[in-house]
Length: 182
Picture 1: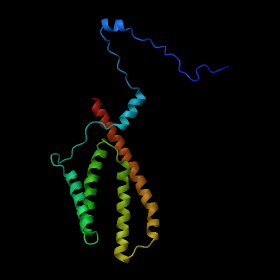
Picture 2: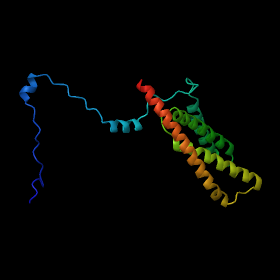
Picture 3: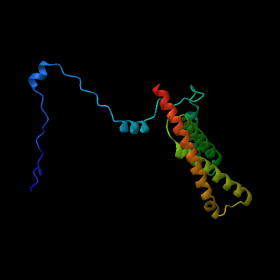
Picture 4: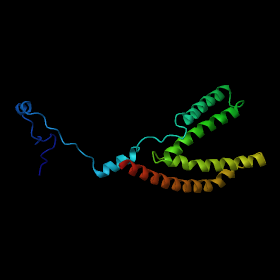
């Protein structure tokens, strides 16, 4: 049996509007296509619900100012030389980190946007850094095996934090979504 439609497209069976009728009758409003439930759920997961939550100090953009000042301090410390301005660079990175963590934590806990992975990575980073700094203060040198030994603890801490933060976000998102439907 030969293929009939190979190489050419078939003629459309859709009726074409009569130009005479189109001029005489006013155009009808086309029905609005509604997305399916599955598409609406997928779209709801991608879109953020409502507006970004306001900070307790709302008129003052404190977090944004911290990020800006930290970025400026980091550039100044880098241009002057990192060796001589280590404290300035550390303070600048700390200011950027505090501002960023505050915004992401506020958005996450209110159910506005999920920052689970980034927030779950913070406690292992702080724990690992604190252990290394304590060992450096005591021994003036950190052994090479220390990071390998701390890795399972870091991973376990990150997994526990991830699960707790994700559950908190899902609850907050559900509350936010249901509050918007009322």
